[in-house]
Length: 328
Image (cartoon, rainbow, N blue to C red; front, side):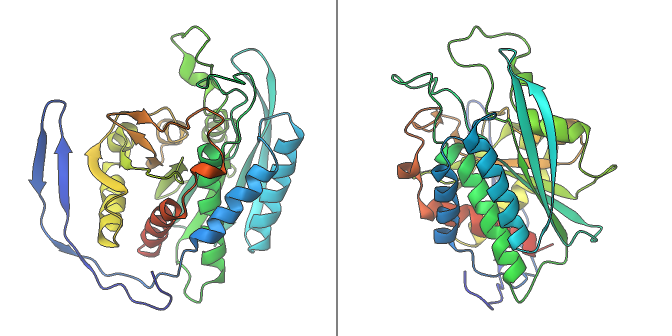
């Protein structure tokens, strides 16, 4: 993507509807979309923001690394000229531990009525429960947490410094306490989902502004790994199918078809569920999860470090979401 370049694209919508037993191709009418000027997304800058987070150590709630990262994130958003506020609250973990959590909200164009919600989680997992060694030690979470935050920080930097800025309002929301669900070794229970996504559960019940509404939301989770592939996640398709299709079509139109696959995937427990079901805001999840192989090899392991991060993946996701925002 180049600065000051008008994207004049006729987007052909070719969707693949995937069943359990067979794949079916559906031909959609060709739609010509007026395309706005889009600034450059810098993948190296996003990589730096990820590296900075990892440098604080695991961002596990109730630790010094968690506190230091929270302060840095708030200061960084504020340095871009955004209005920053926090939600500080206490939540109980699966093992009864009291977690001191902080949701971070940074708003661009706060007076705009039409708003887009962009989210990610910024905490990391306190156990490497899928690993074979150092299982009870926390992980770096370079991809699972830091990558989504890094992309959002770069988007905030680009938007606020661009000569042409979006007309819509944007709320960047970093959810805390997403990754503290039960470990693999703990016996599964019927209500296990409630131990995940603590920050988004809290925000959905008590948003930072009473009566808050957004046109739609996009959640970024694990969006920086080498070889990542993003499928149309099940919950996203249930609540926001039109937004999913729009984003995936935009991705294909600007050259990122290798990353954004035109195929459905399984529902994933993630921060978009409370946003959809409680806050009633249609939110999609861009997440590295394959319907055939599941999560990447790094998932909830110590391998989730900077070695797994690829600027090419960050570029594909960052350009796609930035492009989407600029069409509103």
